[in-house]
Image (cartoon, rainbow, N blue to C red):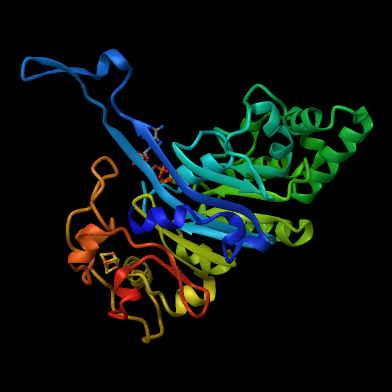
Length: 353
Ligand SMILES: Nc1ncnc2c1ncn2[C@@H]1O[C@H](COP(=O)(O)OP(=O)(O)OP(=O)(O)O)[C@@H](O)[C@H]1O
Ligand code: SF4
Ligand SMILES: [Mg+2]
């Protein structure tokens, strides 16, 4: 058994972070088949018919806790598995392996009916506000829909009052309720999508790159709206972004992902002041800074691996300046450091870094 697999066996009650965690992700893996259906998988090899299956290992043993009231930002380059984590947590796709617990209850194996109460408590905001609003529905209908689903006992007036309240809270004039999504700008549409998520008074929000499709000029406004909502409604966020400036502004803690695994989890201040994992160091060194006390831009060499043929051992070893023989064989486990930062790196564990 490799080191990463050992951490998977840790039960939530044994985990040091578990007491205050709203969400616990343990040993989460998701692979997507690239080989089509059964017939498409059959190939002739050496005169014999064999079944050939190929997978994308989108996430590969993710362990993560999200504490009540925090905004946990997940960062990492395109294709590292951020959206797959988000979609698995929300039950939009089922994991290949692993467990997800919400408020102590396992949710990854529930039926849609069993998941319904959690769908009210957990809401998602997507990247593209053009795709996430139904073009055939007015804004009023868009916002009424989740309320009707989750509050079948509510009167018409209760629903109208709630829609009005939530529209005001995101800065959309309630008189615009009869309009359709296409009549609004990208920023306004994202406000409406946020209103839809907030309408059912959730406690946990998964936001997958919620501002990256918006004009730069309005990104800050929408980010502020999300931060105000967190403060006013006591929300917990899983916030996915590739923008480190957003992380610094928004995040309580940060999880850095690389090729389907979490390599470092730290408070935002600690991560920016003292990045430990070689990949985090390279990522942060790319931010232009006025002050001169940061390491110079670390240029990563080596081929960027694909999640189809995952490297053995540490998935970063082909690009890491500190890689040694152990790194090529053994998957590093996330280990907690003195200050609570968690790092998955043999060089950090061995004191070489
Ligand atoms: N439905 C799918 N079928 C096949 N492969 C998929 C599927 N969804 C995701 N993948 C692959 O899984 C890997 C992780 O994808 P994911 O969308 O989670 O990355 P990401 O970190 O969100 O990237 P980005 O920053 O570009 O949004 C990628 O290699 C992607 O191509
Ligand atoms: S485990 Fe080895 S290859 Fe991976 S980041 Fe650490 S030093 Fe580099
Ligand atoms: Mg994504």
